Picture 1 (cartoon, rainbow, N blue to C red):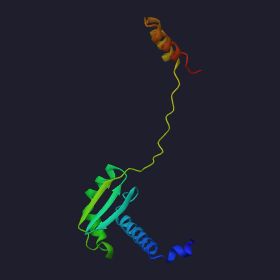
Picture 2: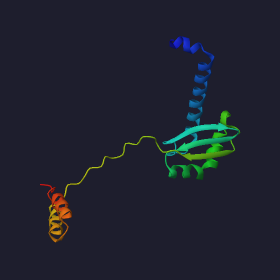
Picture 3: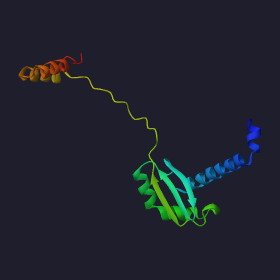
Picture 4: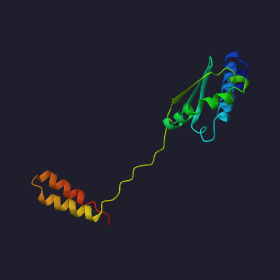
Length: 140
């Protein structure tokens, strides 16, 4: 199958048309959001007058809920959203976050000295060996 053949199938054509309509609707919804709220917000659906959005954080979702009347008023100016009467906001954190990688801080000389001192006061031989080994990991 080629792209030309796929474009002729009615199911795929319908799917592409629905995806394009969804993209346009999302564009219009995000344009109607107040400054600073569009980033991290996605349009999910609009069925039977209920507009559903997702926000990456609970704080952003609360801000959208707080300003929902203002948002819906602006949206109703658009033909697609003329009958919107309810706004539902769900929290959907991003699926993959690239958080900072954990970097172990090297052991300071003072902490190494304290570990050795504690090892000297410990009666348990296994614990003393572990504490001495930890103390040997001091930064230079």
